[in-house]
Image (cartoon, rainbow, N blue to C red):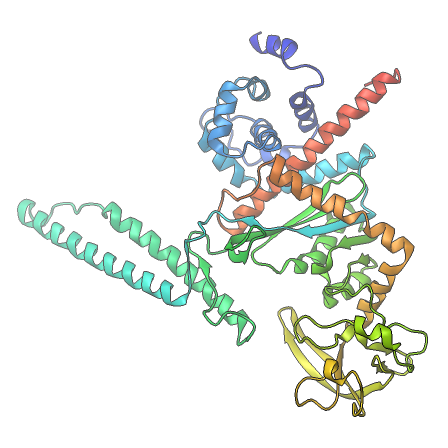
Length: 510
């Protein structure tokens, strides 16, 4: 047949598309097949074929439905993959969002296959997040006053169009009698009603953000902005400057082969909240929980560190603010830091005074010691309210700071005694910090950056995933899962080719 000729002459045995098709053919597609109604209409294209075209296209940076349609008509590798079928863009667009749950199983199967091949393992994983632009123009955002103005304007336009529609119906009744069939709702009125619904959704999301912000004084007095086209997204700062509507995908990758084992798309900047659920999902899906987790300082959250320790997952996550040349650690904490070294004591970037890192804690005596060797003892407790919940911290205070040469660097204006707070998670933070200082901890943490950063590098640069095509947290999560699955399959294709080439060189079976 014609396709057999293409198969033999143009798509060689080591071509990536052939290896990809072979790999997907080995997966279980029964859950996908169950979604099809085989009793009505024309015989459907098997979901494996449509999924293969989507995944293969993503590995090449071809993401849009129309470009995939064009590739299936004009590129030999795609034509071979879909067996000559012409799949239109609407089929690709609908398919992309229809099989979100089933796609999770395909991603799971890629990791299982990688483990069977010996190129992936789950004992050590790293988690990282990045920002990807939402399908919402930078300028298409609004704060509360602007949103109210837009809603009022839409209401006014709807009222004017509705009045005009009623007048038209009255004229029709006079011409054709009261039994005449009223016309359909005008297209422009339907469009305005849809716009009003989107604005009301944006208003509801904005109210949730404002409620969460409360009365925080460190945020803009103008209030938050909400994207109008995709209210689930959040306006966040970008690395290339400025602000724009974004989502924050958080990816967990195993460090042996760099395969993605879990993803979660966060609607906001609170990426650290995804760490513990990711460990639970990995254990649930693969029957094995990671022994060690690597992450950057942005994931250093006390409650999460405690939860990881409870799950016996060893965390290697540096503190949010580190002072590597801190001279405060010394054998005898009651002895002052040597005078020449005092100029290197850590300064808090916010308060511009001595940072808490300059005060060392003695667990046996439940006492902090300042750089001058003076003790800070417990003087009370207070409760706190943070984004992730409530808690309690203890207050430690010096007996007197009178005559201290470091007082100008240490005390705020009109403050007579220095205070330090210690919450219920400081113990676990200190254990993690100590672990990172060991040779084994340093060696293990050194594997984080190459794995985590290269994953996003490939997704953004090679696979062209710099902006979402879909809107809404559910759809963008599915869209990103397609990309993560394609990322894993591309790796598996390369590993399969390498293993077969090695076997051929050694005279073994492919």
